[in-house]
View 1: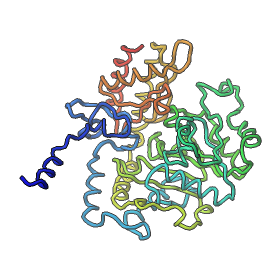
View 2: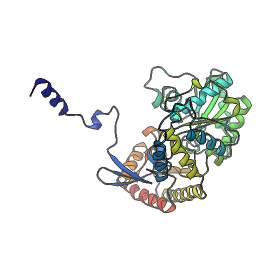
View 3: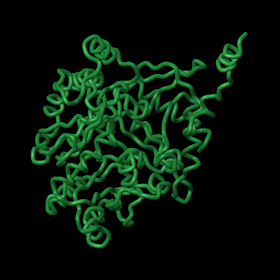
View 4: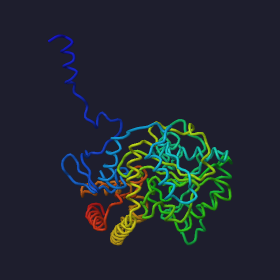
Length: 433
């Protein structure tokens, strides 16, 4: 064996680190190998009900056959085209989104490829339109993972590690009625969480506010559902001050609440809306910014990404948009959500460790509490592990620092599936109550 051959032979037999050791971040202890519908299986053959839809993005579950067929068909025609050009699938996605969005949102920008960049693009548009700079964001909000959106996120965990942050973020108390910042109840508060934003602008901002970015239902922040009238009041507040109201519907959009958008559920039209995650139904990346006509006139080079409006993703999005608009689809989301919400609230009655159960459609949260009412973070993690042992995949809120178990099952969940999920929630609770 020559020296060169020996060297190559040694290289091919080099011992590589295990994936967990090689990764630069902590991985879970499950290796998923297959998915179908609401279920996923690991390398050991264990079956799980995926109650977080991948990363809240598998709107139609794992490997939806119609979506996969649309993608395969598109691969035979055109896999990719620069967003400098039009393609038939991207043009149709734009038309479909404009048709189903709130009527004031007439323009669609598909040049982002994820929720973080979509939110950044919406903020850019608002700043360009208003000539102002500050961005108001509620406590606990999650706008994304890029440096700019991480700087604007409503939790210090996402901002603290970085010495230089995007300036101009103004964080204000959100409508978290279960733990009201102002120690009020919805019946008595007079909507202080909107009214007091004026004080934050006056005393804590630069005095130049471009926009408010809010998730109509807080996702990572604990599945916080605003009280009746909150979003209407926030829209009024923004209109009076010529501030752009942006709904981050990256988790709530396309049927998650049982309506096409949370804007429809709450009866409020934002000035702009961002979509991502579930837009392609089964995991391919695509994001959209929907805006009013007055904010759409800008140079497209100011916000453009290589894989924005990806052709394969557009094909998946078209199939998804057709499916979620079928008769009975949203009715099933509402029916399944009602079953699951009701069953979880029944568990709450007999288990004081459950402090609150809240949600709309199939966007639900179960908040655990200590006997004194404080957040039960350790118990939430114990419950998550117990749920996993019972075949349920969930997440803990606030990037693991909260005490709310987050549930976002695929929208194809049936009422019978919802009962099965609730049964396992009850069984898993016995070990930690």
